[in-house]
Image (cartoon, rainbow, N blue to C red; front, side, top):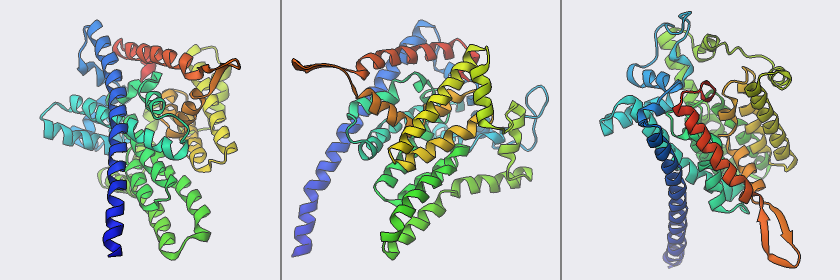
Length: 384
């Protein structure tokens, strides 16, 4: 009888959970549709269509989706570039979308990115509920869907998939679901090179929990950590079979003049330089590192360690494209949402009237979002 009663007690809780998640998904959908409406209006005003959204690196992903990985370098004037630098999870998913929907590969890459973008907004709201429950859900959704670099959720790049599985992994980690976190990390490690480093926050959380954990939970912690490198390992095995070099994804970076060096050296060079865009990117990188320091100060070591590595690794190869590497990191976006929810001005005599940071920052963010989409449509080099 007790089992039956327990089952009946759980049903309303489960139903309420489904309804709550349904409301959050509708919220994510509304923010996503607002983003899409802005993009559509800008495309129409420029007399462009959605094909323009597959540019720059999207072409490389299209090559992976259509032909697989190159046997030899062949591209760029020096003939030293190959598609080995582009990880497989996103283009393989897009290839499946192209086959199912019977659309071209470039359009499938754009559609796939948009699907992941919608799911990433929802996942980020769930992630925020665990790690920063005071942040309003609508604001968390708006931070992802309407920030200036939200452009990259629509253009056939990996950013939206990276954010989605980062949020899923860190959400599971915040709930001490170590196997689920490891499964999310396994996919993430096949999305971008820094994805595998989600194992660091998993190990930090696991070490915190390990002394008090029972044997089965300890096994789950170890299993979760072992799952994370799976995606990267399969990619490396495939590269070894195709090229004879399991680290070809790293070695080919020289074709883009991206050679690992001292990240702080690149940062200082950018700050001291005279070119405005590299200086801006260096300033953004400095702000990101200060945000990481704030996360460490708050003792959110799992989030801080992930963003520290996700910032320093791309920074070690230069400043180009740093904005999209920074502002699609879940921990940094979460901290931004927390700051935007702060009160800026209040009146003691009228406590019901107050000005919050988001009231000023959000319109500026939407303006930045519009500016970046226009820059992409116009083919500006700095959006690469």
